Length: 404
Ligand code: SF4
Image (cartoon, rainbow, N blue to C red; front, top):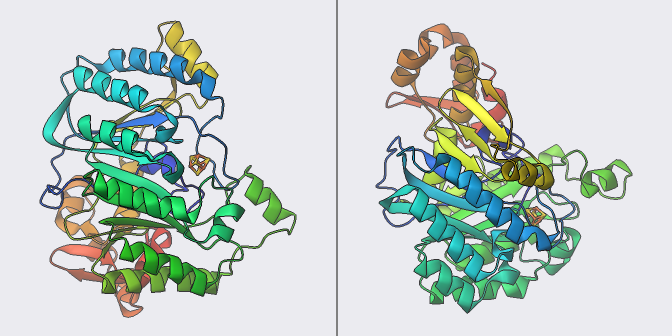
């Protein structure tokens, strides 16, 4: 539903092609269980947004064949006895599936996998697709979190982004989701769009806060190679805000949302206390996950594996009885250590120093004393309660902190 946004450039590391959300009320109380997460990639969109590089196609006639292939992929993993405590259905645009198709998919997943009774079950939806029938079906199927791709509440910017919904549809979608009984609603927003001013962004943000979602993802637009928007910028037809303005977007967004009771718990993610995304937290803490569907990634704790980024190849493999895996890599200890640093610096929780030491054999406080002192003096990191964590200013440059 969104893409080309900072924090997602490394989506290959962070997720099975995407993911965001927070779970049910049980959430924050849910400390990390260590159980794996399950991600399903629905590779369809009604039309492509010019900024997006997520894998999806617009040939919706292929949906039945995809669902059949997905059933076969599910069958490859179904009896391994794994229990999951999060399920995230993303894409693409899962809500382009008919309600009955989503219902069937959720039933297939439940019959093949064990989900904990309080599992966080998220579906992403485009505001234009949300209606009473879809919402009732999702609720009846046990979906307890809806992540709505609002992106902006400015019709001009929505048109620029080539979104297929308007502001009014986003507002109705949130109201309808509440009326249908969804307590846990996440909204995706984008800032740093060419032509977007701080005034226009904060108008959207204020309105979004007034809708009282318990989770907000505020992504900074970045250019992804090969997208129409990147091409327009290359030709000089559109210009991203400069670095100073981007930094203003980031820091003032964090201030406004924290003043409004949200915790800035990851570079691009904010949640009411207790509503952090349990699913995304797995990506950020190196917890294993399984991703199914084209372009989906899986992580075992050491091995990363990714599916074919082509619906046709995905369908062909499964029709031939093969797993649709494009490739895999076994991460070295050093790669895992660097990722743990990189991921830790992106979260407000930060890096647990003792756990890091026992897992990777590196005493950061002792070995990096000089650079950590400098970063602390610069106000980019802080050390306390056994954690090394980024400050707000540090989160703005989180990826560079990992280079210590
Ligand atoms: S709706 Fe737009 S942003 Fe979302 S996955 Fe499809 S093309 Fe990408």
